[in-house]
Length: 160
Image (tube, rainbow, N blue to C red; front, side):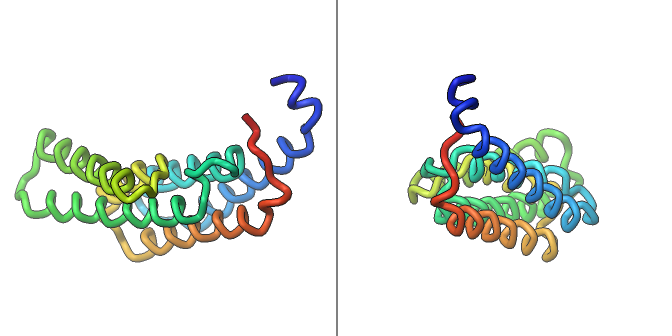
């Protein structure tokens, strides 16, 4: 890997800077919302996939945008399920979180739209309750990261 770094160091630096700037913007926008850390973490993982592994299927816009949309929907379903259980305790909360993430994984795999960080989005949405700003933020940044990858597709390479 060291030889590859020596040969392609400009890609490593450029793509890491793209990811850093993306995270800066994500934290600036979503950081103002309560409990948004989990959502920001899933988008941070997306930045890794998009900028470190741009040639992998999980970095393709269909997977990134679709995966996060599925994560939002499944997370909201888990949140609504928990709201229906008055006085939900630890076991019920764990079940809600588990069902949201498991359902997101199931749907992503069945419709061939795998994006692993989107499972974190499902988890985060159960936590935040899927407020409109957070949902729009997730989808906006999924689209923005995908657009950057598409525009720069000839200037990016897999770093692994």
